[in-house]
Image (cartoon, rainbow, N blue to C red):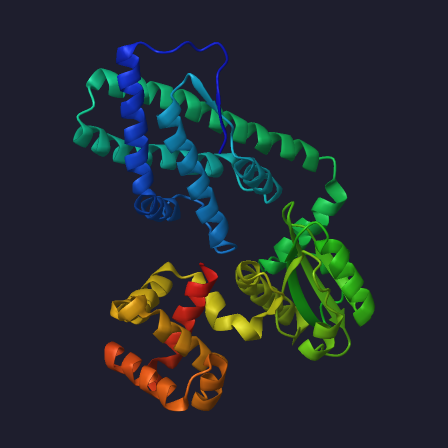
Length: 394
């Protein structure tokens, strides 16, 4: 985040320099607790009215990281410094307007963040022995900068809402599709698509996502239903009289297009139309993190795990943290396990991948079982998922 010093500011006197040092120290202490504060904020946001993070938990975490970074910077610079509002926060506000999320729901998230950060701020200020007058001035300056942030976010939201009113036909189609996905009783004949057909759902993002999906539908000779629920995300369905397989789709996929795509499995009828879409949305965060085009059947377990904080945290603590006690932080054991799973749990193939002897792999796997207190035959699937999550988060 770039910080611009306001023009014409003169060097502060000695007392102000002391306060400036205290501000920087306080901001540094809060930044050191970023992960702790972010986790607490995620828990608080989940409890807010209207909270719904099923679409993309990564996007919520991105919001938390950006807004906390802004708040920490506002503590550091004070009112005399000006902070640029992160463009991603403005983009999220516009996407919220497109998704018709109420503005008060959006603003609640910001005020929850401000309130929570201040609770940590008071705790750190007390430990640092910050004078009440200095703390009062700091809170005043922070509030002014936070007010600018909220005003910019609200302005982006309302400006986007005004634009949407000028693109009503496309928006009406998106609303009808969303209503049908939600199980509402609507006149589906208004949507140019055969819901009784065989379907494959897709979710994409990127500048050329819509163009890529249209070209793919043409190559596959399928009817395409495409809507844009937000400015960056595209939902699509490929419909036809016969079922599509991954073998039909994969050879027609673009290479190096800069487009992130995920696909659901083939399904039929209206219920299948909904199911394949849900699968594509669940797989989408995995594809984005991997930087690959993915299909749900290949990443179903991983897609479920990364959306569940309790499960992903538990897998790491149960299966990976014990390995870290080994020499080199357990890196050799993790690489051996990754090769073993990649080789379809074949010891000889894993040894070939690693360039070591078969008995070396066998001994390492036994070490893992001893550390975990579980045979790989029992915990292999969970351990493989834990390793996949670790790679995704690198």
